[in-house]
Image (cartoon, rainbow, N blue to C red):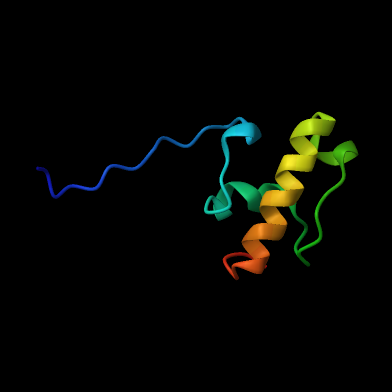
Length: 65
């Protein structure tokens, strides 16, 4: 067994994000931590809902602000 830890590749598709991808989720928040609306993110409604839930879960786990 290898001791090298494998990292999954970062996808640019918001549907593949997890709440641990804080760097990726930062693109969808303002400097003050508010979630950007679809008008500015350009996401579909389903993607926007998923990203919003992931951001809120990340906040709850105290991974992101």
